[in-house]
Image 1 (cartoon, rainbow over the protein chains, first blue to last red):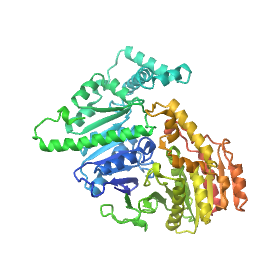
Image 2 (image 1 turned 60 degrees about the vertical axis):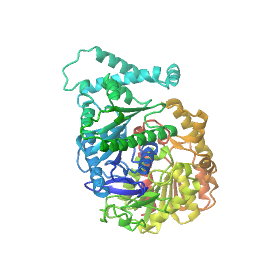
Image 3 (image 1 turned 30 degrees about the vertical axis):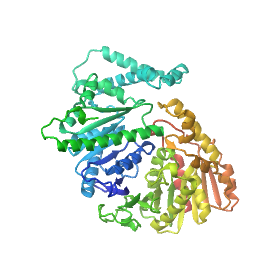
Image 4 (image 1 turned 120 degrees about the horizontal axis):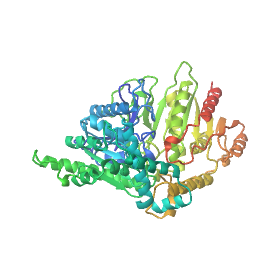
Length: 315
Length: 296
């Protein structure tokens, strides 16, 4: 594989590393992969996971670009006052334009951890060039966050569900109980989340611009467009609790129908602090990427009007 | 693996041309220049920042990162250092050691000797890019330790800023071990391997193979037997690491050695949310001021 330092964007101020397969591994028909910053962590990713993912995908024939949004890592700062929610989409699209110009890529897979997942979804829903997204431990990404009331309700319910699951049903429950018994636990935060969630459930709902039922509409739209979205949740992270909270019984229905692809990695936290879990994550991404190419091959062989909802076409 | 760089060839780098990548366009002065350099198969990622403003110093600055998890948490500090030093008129090169950040290789196969060699390669690159004779090397924690070793080997480094350098490898490994133990106790992680194995072979998300452990164990900055630089600043931001002995040892070679104590939180201690780590602003200002005064 080949790694290049690149600079791109409207003002050439975005810095990234482009990993491309060697000629032997290259497959010109594959979408290019773009890895988006996880919070303030710059482009190698938490524990250098993005480097591992990029190199691993390059060995499969994918070109992969990891870059820094403005103000992070080596990238310059923006001269305008755009909010991050908008600038991250614009800059991801600039990354796609760059890959289109210099790699000939027309379709893209976006992936990221935490806020990188959020940026991936935001861009995917706006840009039809995105054919896939891997959302790793995404936080509160499926509902309208401008609705403060709904946002607070869903966050509190998610946290309450998360605390109960960690304490009673997760593989960390022994550790959690020890921490609870020895007082090494933040009771105030837990109590606040549980109480607020309980009060919120009992209070009559006022008319809202959006409802939890609206959440997930982005996923439906993307599925309708033929874009695949994989959720990867660490067992110790609240992201799977959020999915359950916001989607309710639809989570199981959508998983069964293949509409929502979900992989839960047991025994790990938000940033994959153990090497075995980093390897697990890389394998999950590789398997999904492999299924994408198989899916594409099958789609080519299939009659054009065959529906895409055949479970065999999904993980 | 082979590497190339769009920008390296714009600025006279030795990287082979990659026809697919952007054509040569002179970089505006304010933009960083990312590139790869060093030997094929073990190329290092660097980001060069040209001096800004009217002032042009006759000395370039090389920034050496700490290792592992500290590399990530101090990224913002290095960004700030780069911008301030560049604004003060210094050409600045920030780079990643082998197996770290964007450089080639993996930590599993990296070694202390390789890293010392990397820093020496980066010093040469700093001279070449900055077109200056003098080079000041700044390193935080293990970055400072390795920089001292490389500088002592070469004997041509003009200045050295050692920010809370690791003086004894054994103590550093003990510290990593304790933080790994704390992480295993508090974070939502459950190893499928034996806990003792995870404690021995990993450190806060990064591999710690036996060969690297042995190399780190052997580190002892007080055993340096040659003057690493003519001017040296040692920054001690926390009393748990007494740098007095190191400063005394470095003074015996006759150079100008300054020890500055500037109490700051121990930013290198592990916390799960890296976004909560603050940039040690006062120490940063002090380091930039010292370099600016030492190399007017």
